[in-house]
Length: 197
Image (cartoon, rainbow, N blue to C red; front, side, top):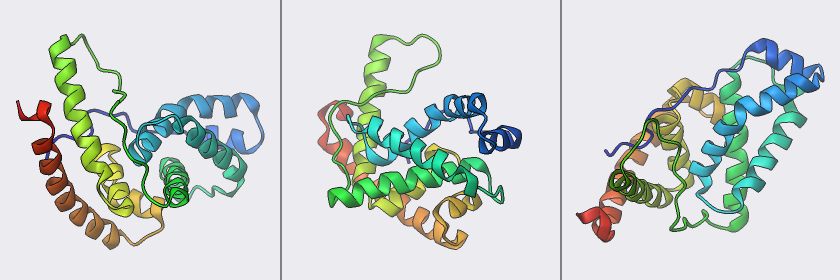
């Protein structure tokens, strides 16, 4: 299977910060927003695909986060709870549109570490586009599990908590998602001229 995620930093939100946010501390809420924003943006981008609506989805996710923060009981990791919100926001968008949002030709790249040569950046962008298109062909439930596991690095338990499903269901969906992704990826790579070099 092609590399899907690269390096990523796990979201770690201290319980004390969450506690202060729940008490209405504006500084803590601003800190929580700044700490989680890149993770929320990345998650929604991967689930819904690129487009101008990502900002709207990010706004919806944070409105949901801060309006429901009082219901977070701390029984699961805060990151699992937050990713659950992102999944619901992206899923609502997909259902509202009647289908998963179509991917556009432009792909925003995550910031690269170190200096890269222009040819290397072009190759990386082309490869990322093939991966995004292949992901876009997967059913939403499979895509969600694959993104959370392969790209976000969540464990099976964390994914089960985020999606409110049994852990065995996570592994079943992941198995089917990997098989479907491989087929979709090979089809996209074969049909993308730049990927055939």
